[in-house]
Image (cartoon, rainbow, N blue to C red):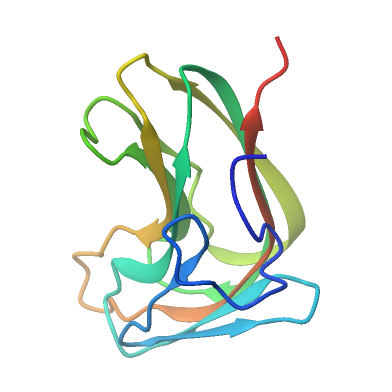
Length: 154
């Protein structure tokens, strides 16, 4: 397991290798006792940065990123997703889950990531592509129950 605090059970330690839960305009984040993180979008902003990220030191190879999440009424045409990038060169490694839109029952998503030899540190970030539509303020609730990054079995 390459990520710390995978269920958001404890308050972040302010280490780059624990969750950074930075306050963002139009977003409220609440750790839920033993059941992850609730991210509430207030319908006030065309959000790009959700304020949820963590770094992971990795070796070259194949990894499996797993997120278990659910959602209620995520609005607009651009949903929320996890992005994984090489912090030194995002062009070298960039992977994303499919975005969450609307309402989603609790489900797990698996993303397979190949880390090249030059990559040493990944950033795992909850993100959104801002929409160009007039009605662009993101609203709804996303619950992240569990997030894991682990070497994939060979």
